[in-house]
Length: 177
Image 1 (cartoon, rainbow, N blue to C red):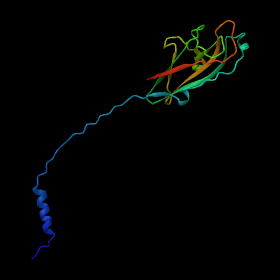
Image 2 (image 1 turned 180 degrees about the horizontal axis):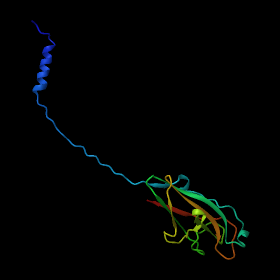
Image 3 (image 1 turned 180 degrees about the vertical axis):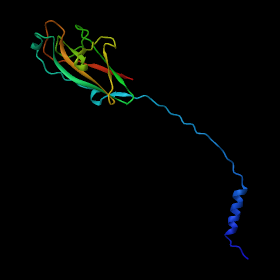
Image 4 (image 1 turned 90 degrees about the vertical axis):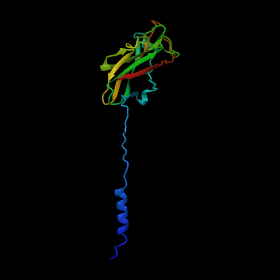
């Protein structure tokens, strides 16, 4: 009796599988990573922002030391693990009123006051103060820290305010944790 030809290759394959020793090698995998703290950045519109104070008249300073308040907000957008942001301001101080920010425009006898307005209470940042005096810390809410701000003209001399332009430059630095 003849056996079918397909049985022979099956027998050869079975003998090869069971008769050959296989080498087994083990290895290990190592995984590394780094969990970093979040970051914050100034909102796009606040990175290089122009704050236009309202026009005022020389006569506005006849009986007042300041005029032309402009309110605005500075915003830092943060990752969810950031709890607070400190905004620190820096600029050139006025030669006659060193606590005020200098005007490099053409008007004379005028400087700029930059202030925070947290809870509606104005705090004037000194242009020449230490970092603590030039800073305010705001808690984050939903990944944002919003500092209510204001700026206005201020008279630096008793007499002699002249017409012209006001140009003041200040920088803001944010730190966060």
